Length: 279
Image 1 (tube, rainbow, N blue to C red):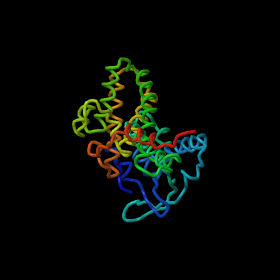
Image 2: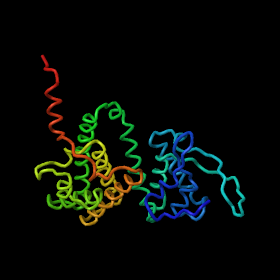
Image 3: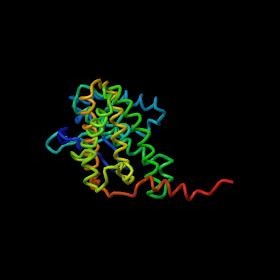
Image 4: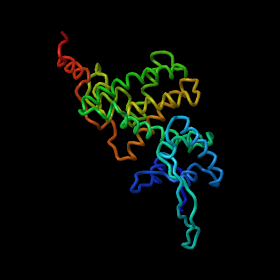
């Protein structure tokens, strides 16, 4: 088995495996990335993750499946060892239950949280039923409005109290996600007016990226118990940057290069106008 060095966020994507049944991760690969010296020390983490899976109401067999793997032991020889086939959600639960003092664990928490949230959005029944880009934009814009309220509340608890401080906090998240661009920079890049709300001119892909940024920042502020605005700003920037890295790793278009869309307010106005009049 090759040495796995956790020097970049996308190392988690590099060890992702794919077979006829879809994508999965090897528990042994993951234990190396998460810096466990021996696999036996990693087994209790898997057990806690399985328990968390049960408590969440999920079927554990859909996320944790034992299998036998062949690993090299030198001189071309291989030996059969027990392993666990892990879904993306299983990996998310594992990094939530791994040793919190390790930097790579924190990296994995953000990475798999973002990826899991991406899957959740795509699999949401109300979202998958939508057929047009306009419908998806309206749906995600409403989701983002709601989650921005939660983010504002979490930021306030973390010490971001004044309106100016919150504007600075938001800009840190945008800078992380947009490669250094703040709200003003994004407007300039996309040719929008100062009065334009940048969120109202985003397509569904860009809205989804910002939704991931907002939800994961809210979770991390709460999980890490952040209590000062400087740390809150750093957290928002870091999460934004990691969402950007995830987009890069899966071959996506950077958000600043995505096209400007018609104002969502105009789309909503047209939709209301086309509604049949009630009698």
